[in-house]
Amino acid sequence: MYQRDRRKLILPFLLPQSLLYAVFTLVPLALTVYYSFTNWYGLTMDFDFYGTANLETVIKDPFFLNAVRNSFVFVFIGGILMLIPAMLVTLALHEPIRAKSFFRFVILLPTVLAGSVVGLMWKWMYNPSFGLINPVLRAIGLGEYALAWLGNEKTALVAIIIAMVWYKIGLWVLLLTAGLEKIPPEILEAGKIDGAGDRQLFFRITLPLMWETIRVVLILWIVWGLQEFTIIFALTGPTIFTLGGPLGATELMTIYVFKTAFGAKKWAYAMAIATVMLAMILALCAVSNRLTRKEVVEL
Image (cartoon, rainbow, N blue to C red):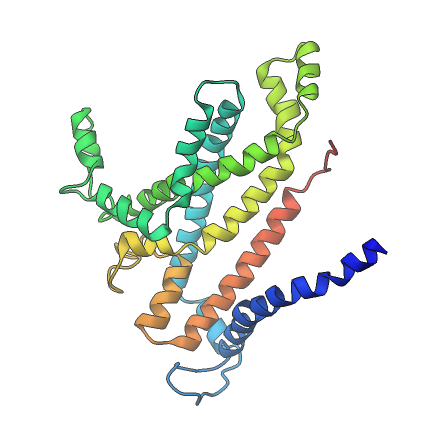
């Protein structure tokens, strides 16, 4: 009786959220795909169907291909620079050290900031005239590395990745900590009794038991990284002419969609780019999920 009454409450609780999700996510998504097959320019409702012409143009567009390359570099390098330090910090904070709560607070602090605030803060720090980074480099004898970080096409994307790592690493530490704390301490103690060293404990016990959490973190990063927009807009904007610069070095797929829609006013073409981008994200997540799938260890 009690369970049956509880099941009756499922629909009333799910219905409002489902309606909001449909109105603000599913319907716009469907319209985006629909208009990608037209020549709609966003000003009137007069348009003609182009079929797959827009999509065929997108996959041959050199600017889009450059944005794809930048996006994958951003995701790959950013993932490496976040996963390794986040794992090390997680393991360090799992040990019985003093002021553990303080260190966790410091690591998690950037995640509560808005992406626009983080972007503007790092834009100031990268400023070659009155920023913070270049004077520090000169003071410690590394003046040759005092560069115009956001003005050089060789360093602009790296500079944005560093800002992104600083912003997101706390969330990675939080998720990895949750996975690490699920491991029963008795298993690690048994490994130590059997003579396993710290390296063996990590690679033979800790890492396999955390693998499911790491998989989730990596797939989430692929989705977030390929859709990143706010920090790049704050660091390279605010005008449409500087956005994604210099010379397209930081132009990710999201930036190219924005510039095509709001700069060139090619709304249907921008939606075609977004459709291709959606298909790429879904395919990449499916492949990543398949390649990283392993037998789950029940604790």
